[in-house]
Length: 72
Image (tube, rainbow, N blue to C red; front, side):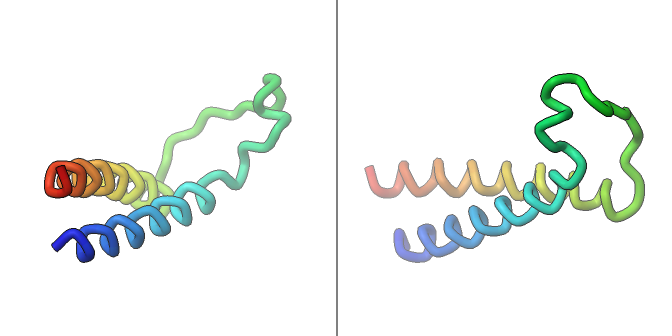
């Protein structure tokens, strides 16, 4: 069972990394120092990806917690 949890955790980690990298398109180093900051609402696919990122992050945390409890 631990092997399956590790595989699921790896898949979720890769998915989470991809989702975060796809969303980080407009936040370059210039935005850190206050340049070109535009606040806008998320719509359509961008909103769905944002919600999917939150869901995958929560699922990743839960699987990691279960994995630790099963091993210990």
